[in-house]
Amino acid sequence: MPKHLTPADYLKKILTARVYDVAIESPLEPARNLSRRLHNKVLLKREDQQPVFSFKLRGAYNKMAHLAPEQLGRGVICASAGNHAQGVALAAHRLGARAVVVMPVTTPQVKIDAVKALGGEVVLQGESYSDAYLHAVDLEREQELTFVHPFDDPDVIAGQGTIAMEMLRQHQGPLDAVFVAIGGGGLIAGVASYIKAVRPEIKVIGVQMSDSDAMTQSVAARKRVTLGDVGLFSDGTAVKLVGEETFRIARDLVDEYIRVDTDAVCAAIKDVFVDTRSIVEPAGAMSVAAIKQYVSERKTRGETYAAILCGANMNFDRLRFVAERAEVGEEREALFAVTIPEERGSFRRFCALIGALPGGPRNVTEFNYRISDAQRAHVFVGVTTHGKGESTRIAANFTRHGFEALDLTHDELAKEHIRHMVGGHSGLARDERLLRFVFPERPGALMKFLSHMQPGWNITLFHYRNQGADYGRILVGLQVPKSDNKAFKEFLATLGYPCVEETDNPVYRLFLRT
Image 1 (cartoon, one colour):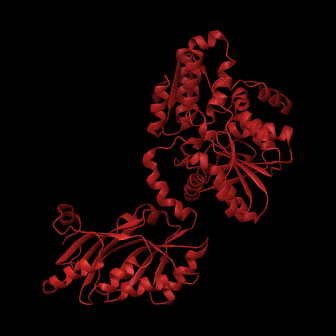
Image 2: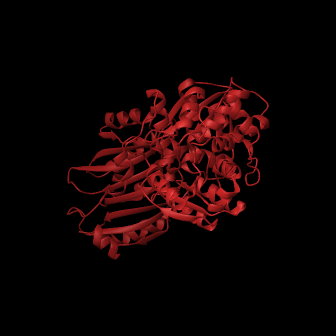
Image 3: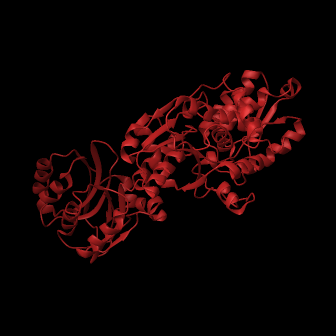
């Protein structure tokens, strides 16, 4: 691989790169809703709209288009977490070459299937890109294939740099900064090479996951640092060791680096969806998360930022996790463990307190409770917030009114597991009736339920989670004296909420009923 190409060399390579046999000139679109919220203009470079839903085909095709005919005849090999693999497979298909793709076993199935559909031969090996890379090097030697590196190659870097060339052609006005996700560094190396050659006043800001920040650590150490482990939420950027050439370029040309966490990226995926009705993968949303963090820290107004949405190869099953964490990531929701006296009316008093919190009415987004102690009840509760940093003040307000509260908004164990594990068998729940309700998702629905209950009825279980629909699904355990059966039927009729009794459900008997 040629070493120490000059900025002029890279500018020439980008201007003459062959990418448009397979790639489109992706749109540069304003994110109007996000721009209004941030009081800065945000532009989205839609690389998620490429034929393989990622920018990676640019560099892969440019590299392969420059290979000699005999090299193409023997075939190519690559190691990739998925997006580069699809680029290589598509390029090989167009060029009539064999493509062997080594992928980590953690790669989402959607990416594996996509590579196979394009004619690539998939080999699964290792837990991360770095593990897959070592195996690919062995296969390269054994089968005399040509290795197509996902990032550490001048032709690949130049192919990715065409994104910056398009952006500056598409946007003629002021541009303060471009935010670029970093895995191995190929994208930011190409983008920075072009921008700093043509418009050096534009900041190039690298973005990494807080648990996969090899480039950030390497630049700080002034040498490449190998991470012992990497987080896999953003599988597209899960790289333990950045490229030698990409490190050299980034060290010299990138202005600064920002780390973002999982919750912030989930919130950014939602932000992109609100503006585009498209769902990007975690790596594709990292640049948007960084813009939000940058604006929050710098208090900027009236500036123009561009975010490269670098991919949209999202496993559908992962959306459940993203939706769960997006509200917390934006801090539009706060989570608490609250201790309530186990006495009549305390649940209602607590709900009334939520409605009277400073700053205006709040909605309960989640409520998990199972009777377990005769004196005190521990509930897991989610509450909407009006902005960042409110959870501490809300917890203090609960405690001040006699409801001891623990702020769980930033507690990974609580968010990942405990919220789904509140419950179990309880000796205090004898003669319990279990009912599934559908509540209208509007203020006052829960208070109506509590207000119509008779004082002698006891809530032994309560589970609710806002799902973003017009209605809420709620599970309630109630102890109702048999003498009140008629009154209970009247209560359900007056309430008017759809209801199914689950007292005889075998799942309930197995996991919850005493």
